[in-house]
Image 1 (cartoon, rainbow, N blue to C red):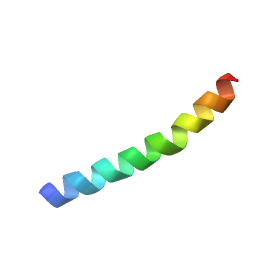
Image 2 (image 1 turned 120 degrees about the vertical axis):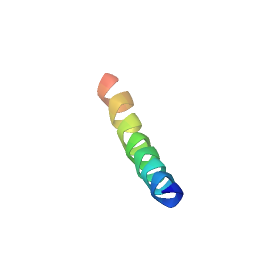
Image 3 (image 1 turned 90 degrees about the horizontal axis):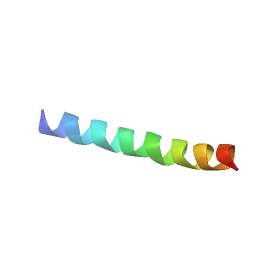
Length: 28
């Protein structure tokens, strides 16, 4: 269970990291 949660957290972190620049550039 713990490993699965960590993996999901990493995936979510990567998604946020990829989406943040898009939102910033989109606002500009």
